[in-house]
Length: 493
Image (cartoon, rainbow, N blue to C red; front, side, top):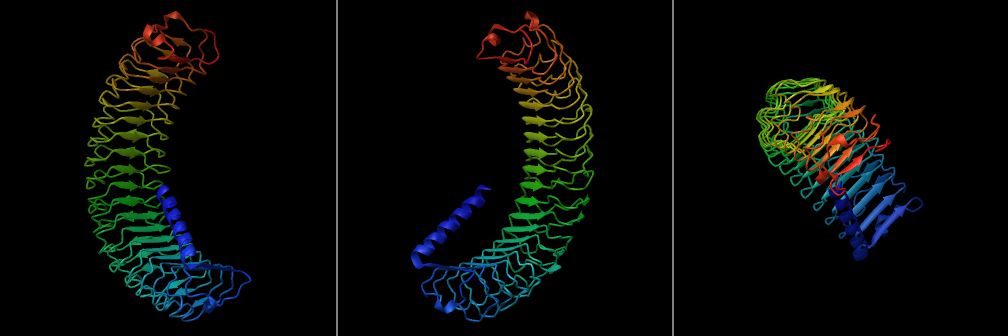
């Protein structure tokens, strides 16, 4: 978001500078389309709401210094070949909300310095001819958004000539269903491709041939159902892959096998129910894996994430996970953040969290957990933040928090706890924050908090406690207000 705003800021500044230096000319509804009357020193020209049904050839041939040209809501149906001939300094061209039906091969002749081409919200736009961009040798960015493009197959030839192209966006175009083999072979400098809501259903083998520099690939809300072996073949430099909202139900074992540099994989709101063992095993440099938010995962098998030696963040929240097999997270030796909240977990099997020596934060909120079993977290020796609020916990077994000597924050709010036993929190010698509000606690045994020598705050609001008794066993150090605050709610001390 920051980068987008910063880019927008720089663009506005450049527009202002252009206006000051060479003069900007803006035409609106009621004006006449007389491009030859524009001074030759004009640096920017924009038509908004002015009817321009046809842009004739050589309309702007005298504007040798113009750097920005835009058409918005002009009703333009035809741009003749060579219409922009002579505009050798043009950097930005925008065709937005026109009535164009096609992009033809002579439309952009002469735009040898063009860097950004925006073709958005053209509801009649159906076709893009091959070699339409053949003159755009300096083109850096193309954006196609909210058009009605009827290209069912993205094939080689459409982007031929745009050898400097670095970023391309196809967003909410209605019929771009297939990415054909060698579609991007003529654009070897691409670093970013964004397909969003374009109904992409098929990626042919070899679709990404030639894209040895691609860093970011987004296939958002696509109609992909299967990621076949080598779906991303050749993308050795890819750093970020987004598959959010796709209809993916199956991932073949070698689908990601060429993504040796991948650091971020986002696949929220996907439809597959289970992950095959070693699905991600080739992603040795992956640091962030997001399989969250409305997915259908039901269980995590042993060794599912084996091989992800560099993974630091794993998001699995908002699925339907009810079962973590023993060793589900084996191999995640670098993981620091595991998010499992908003699932259907009821209990844990022994060694559910083995293999996580670096884990710092574990989020288990909003599940259906009824008890915290003995030693279930005993191998999480680096854990500092544990959130188990909004469950149905009635029991904390003896030794439930054994091994958590590094824990600093424990959230048990909104559960069904009725009694706090004096051994419940004994191992938590570094605990600073303990959240116990909104339970049904009516008894706190003597010395329950005494081992918690670094405790700064306890919340006990909305429980059934009636009296704060001396047998709580708060130490002198804890008693000092600057170290410990009890939030009791409505009851008398």
